[in-house]
Amino acid sequence: MNNQSKAAVNAGVHGSTGTEFQKHCALYFLFEKYKDLKDRKYFICIEHHDDFLFCYQNSDELISSIDSYQAKKSSEKWEMSGLYELLRKMTGVGLSLNADSMPKVNNYTHNLEFITNNSIQLSNGLRGKGKNKSITINESNSSLKFTDLDTEITNKIEAELTKLLGKDLEGLKELNNVSLAYIDFPKKSAGQKDSLVGLLSRIFGEKVSDHRAAVDALLLLFRDVENTLNQGNVVKLMDESKRVSSASINDAIDIITTKTMAFDLWRNEEKEVCRNLEISIPDKSEFKLNFINSFDRFKDYRQVEHKKILSFVKENSNIMYRFTVETDCILELYQMFRKIISSQLSELSIKAAIYAAYIEVRGQL
Image (cartoon, rainbow, N blue to C red; front, side):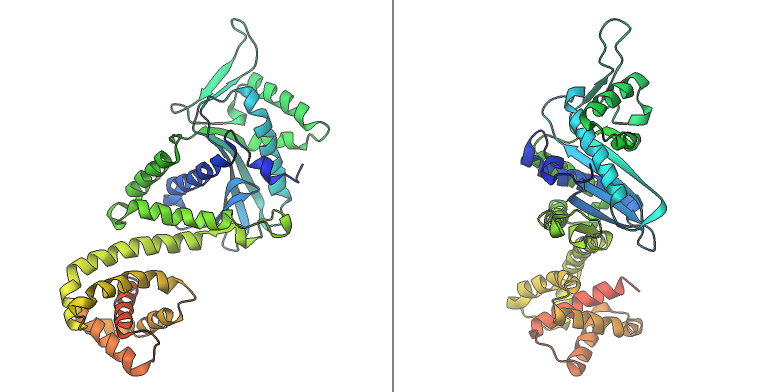
């Protein structure tokens, strides 16, 4: 039961075309949970045990809980007959998560949620007046736990799963961790991205200048782990190559928001900065590009020269208290750097990086 086929786990109503839907759902929940997540330690897995996982950790990096999602888009309403196999797989995921060797806290828990962008019709399978009991999960009743369903409906589900499980009925107990949910997402990928852009806009507002580009940047984080094969063809939460960490997500969001601030500063300070740093008119465009890109390069361990400049500005940040005019402080930092440290970067790139490093360090004081 614990040795699930990855292909089976990720097979849906539309097969491989559903993978974009799964990543969009993962980002949707990241935005939905962001207020609570931004100060927590966690990681997200894509196509690892299940379509995607949110794994929450304590200060000792032990897993405290996991939200596991089976995400399927559909052009038709879901009925009971189409859910049994999915529920069987989800109970198997629950057993696999329990068996995973990743260190967990003693009171570890997990939730197993099926999400879809179409309604879900549940019933006890009986016909006739007064005999049929049913409930619909849709936009007005968006989520239900298995334990909150009518007893006759849960009995029907358990009976059908018993048939599928055969002699190995251990998975039945995982039904208590199952929930079924409707997500208000368009059927087409472009419409889903529009929804994500709207969500991000509501969260960050003017802190992000290009909300669509920000959504694309965050989706790229998921693509990297999605395309990484499980080591030894074994699914393990310890496999860091299959994780998107909270640190990576926070870094990406920090870059996105810092760049917006950088654009605003450039608009307000362009003339004065260029005058003080002696940036000629033909060099302005290149200087601006280097300035904006420096924030990405500060986060990239391969960009040794940029990290050197950022470290220098951090180590000399106390001089900021001596100045009342920012451009004078930036010029002083540049002149100090050139006297003390050699760099392989061009003069223009050094000036741009000093300017960017000043902004990044100033925001941390």
